[in-house]
Length: 328
Ligand code: TRP
Ligand code: SF4
Image (cartoon, rainbow, N blue to C red):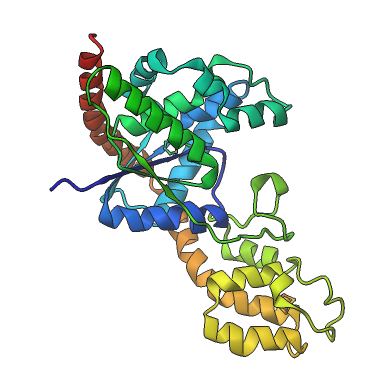
């Protein structure tokens, strides 16, 4: 029996943070033991919006792969590659563009939203409108059964399914209809209490050394009612406690953190110390693996070269079938 296939991609937008680890990467790590997994860096997708300044693209691509590997994505289990190294995606993108009705793309909610909200870039391009067609090509070319994504990507997966159905109906049943596997990511606050996001400058990065993690957690925003050490607090409104829910065992939370906060028996710095005791053993090994990997010249390149070769075999076979079905 063929194992079922999982495929997912990330745009190279910079170093990954705790949000990516607890959202996407923890899921990917589980999937790689159960499914045949394909994970890739969507560098062409990055170009759809950042075409005017691609100066960081290569650097960000390498960073993201380093982050994956250090977080435990295993090249012996999953196929890792860069989208633009598998030109078959581009050829399938072209073929799928022939059968994709323009209104399907124009009514894509992500497209409409971004056109309105993004004001510092000109997104009125062919490439940006076609973003979901390229994504459909990424997915369909591997005959993926499951696509782990966040909820924001659901319209793109729905479009992928529609394009696949249309192709299968017009020509021949070539493509597997994929399903989204929703990543349920816990609430991950940044150090200022807002959602962790690069644009807020409030992130804890996988590539941060333990000292930096410590230095960023110490001044983290807490329950604003705890002005003085003697003021009791409420963990339920405290972003530090959101991190405790992820890292600190329930027993210790209920016996020490919660009562300590509510009675002011512990101070916020003590509380953050407890959090760090549980967070650093998760983050430090990732950091250490990353430093080692980054030092090994050619290691990432070799992993990607091997992944590209495996990916191209599978992609080439589906592309051939698609071309045949379309009379090319
Ligand atoms: N659009 C996805 C994102 O921004 C990235 C992506 C590109 C992707 N191609 C994909 C995700 C194929 C899943 C499958 O997150
Ligand atoms: Fe938050 Fe802990 Fe301070 Fe309570 S003691 S407000 S949970 S940091």
